[in-house]
Image 1 (cartoon, rainbow, N blue to C red):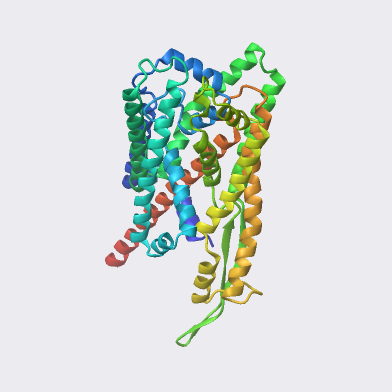
Image 2 (image 1 turned 180 degrees about the horizontal axis):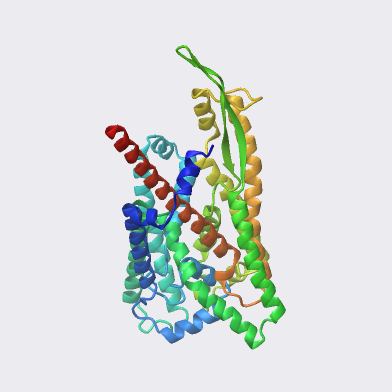
Amino acid sequence: MASAAEKLASNFNFSTFSKATDLKKRIWFTLGALIIYRFGTYIPLPGIDIDQLKLLVDTNQSGILGMFDVFAGGAISRMAIFALGIMPYISSSIIMQLMTSVSSHLAALKKEGEPGRRKITQYTRYGTVILALVQGYGISVGLESAGKVVTDPGLFFRLSTTITLTGGTVFLMWLGEQITSRGIGNGISLIIFSGIVAEIPSALINTLTLGRQGSISTLTLVLLLLMIVAIIIFIVFMERAQRRLLVQYPKRQMGNKMFAGDSTHLPLKLNTAGVIPAIFASSILLLPITVANFNLSSESNWINDIASLLGRGQPLYMLLYASAIIFFAFFYTSIVFNPSETADNLKRQGGFIPGIRPGEKTAEYIDFVLSRITTIGALYLAFVCILPEILISQYSIPFYLGGTSLLIVVVVGMDTVGQIQNHLFAYQYESLIKKSRLRSTRG
């Protein structure tokens, strides 16, 4: 017999979607918020010479500046009010999560439930403002030292730029939280997702133009496009991969009736952390060198050395990036999945993994399996993010076609579609419950 989920899925059609009023409101709210974000990426900062800025961007597009521009949705290349993007918030989130592991006060707040999480979120917001102020001031100083980009350099320009960029980041932080609570999907991830998707068409056009001009051979161009398609397929396959642990429940007697034992599966995703490790790793690399690529006229050799060592395709950049991805894959998995808590829940419900003693032994076994599959997942993330960067570092291919961008687009897209499906399932389930109640009252 078909399961309840299969029956619900068989009844999915456009009319079901059209009747889901709450879901439609959430989708329209999300689209409206993302349109506002995209509009803000085209509003330039005051006091910037657009022509000089274009020259600066064109000469530094292949470095860290280009990577930063990906997460800012093109706002960096246009030096818009959203140029800092959402990265200060992500950096603050990383710091707070790391501090939770070492600070007893924050660890106690985390255990308090919803009130404690709200307090940690408040600390994260404060950290976002501080980081945005520091990075905004750094960008204003860097722009002044980058030749004739600033039309009227001075204290007023620095203050106005710092305040504007900080305000843009705070607004995006608020917008992302609103999308999460009133829209569909994770707001912060969708903001980054929309910025990348919006720039992909121009990135493809620029790449095809390079092929037409002879900068890239036709064979190389075809191979690059095939590689992009293959990576997308690979990402989808790996994101759906699971290790299912068999869980059995013993026979139960209720009154005079004996109920047979049941069995189910505990699904462990190969990549529990999703796209978070790639975003966190990029944020960590971008944070200390926000100004490096703007200081073109600076005499500070160490700044130029950092910019060159962390340039696209450089061994140090690849090593640090891959190491950070692997670290955050394990770190974030340990935060979102607790083997001891899962084992305790199974024990309270009477479930057990065949051949494993309930309680501590079950927790150790789940942790062992989770560590093994997380190792595969972390290596997969590092491979997807690093391999395209190695292959296309030899050519002037935009960052929007790199492995990190493709990973974010595919994973966030899959998660958002999954949430839409969950809303449709919930709506249809409620409809079936209402119909059954009506039938019972009529009978």
